Image (cartoon, rainbow, N blue to C red; front, top):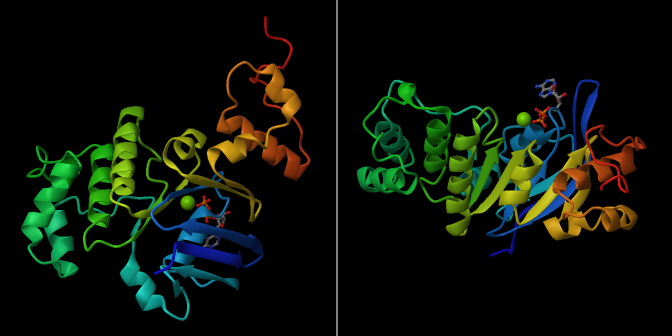
Length: 267
Ligand SMILES: Nc1ncnc2c1ncn2[C@@H]1O[C@H](COP(=O)(O)OP(=O)(O)O)[C@@H](O)[C@H]1O
Ligand SMILES: [Mg+2]
């Protein structure tokens, strides 16, 4: 048993001339929720694809569940489930049929009972007999996350689980992620939303220009803010402010967003 569910060291990946990952390092403790935060195109999906053995890194090492993603790819696949950016459910089947199908494919005993239990836990019982084609985006994503629990993998990857969802569906998906966390699963989720990372994750890493530029608990990231600024603002700094402060620091672009209140100007 390892207390580190995921360990990534010096990961590099290019697509032709595009050097997307330039030495990515982080680790994720077993049973924790880890958010990989970055803008569109930062390389989040590339990291997830490498960790789930779908893509080979150019350099560096990665281990999931104690297994090396290159040398022990089959063991890694046994230990994980991956919920992609676009829901992988079958629209023609009902919610229940989708779950039963996946349970049978994964050779789970008592597939029907497992499906019913998941439908209940993810508030899909009422919609269980309807074709997924009639589901809202949030319901699909919840079904997708429910599916990821079939076979009981210890490590779950959620790649942008709420992108494209309305605010209400987003909250529903957040509750589903909390359900996974409550099960003691290790969850690595990617997001472009600072508040999402703030809300769900025990630990947050910011991926920017090919590297992790900040990594820590929310409290630790908040402390990265310049103290002079923290003195003037009345509310607690949000992760958004931390993000901007860290990015400004690393890229040399110190421009504050035009909408941010300037310290000292508050009345
Ligand atoms: N198969 C590919 N071929 C060429 N470029 C790619 C490929 N996959 C991703 N990219 C590019 O690599 C960068 C990182 O992509 P991605 O990992 O999907 O970022 P994110 O998930 O953070 O939005 C983007 O500029 C994207 O256009
Ligand atoms: Mg992506």
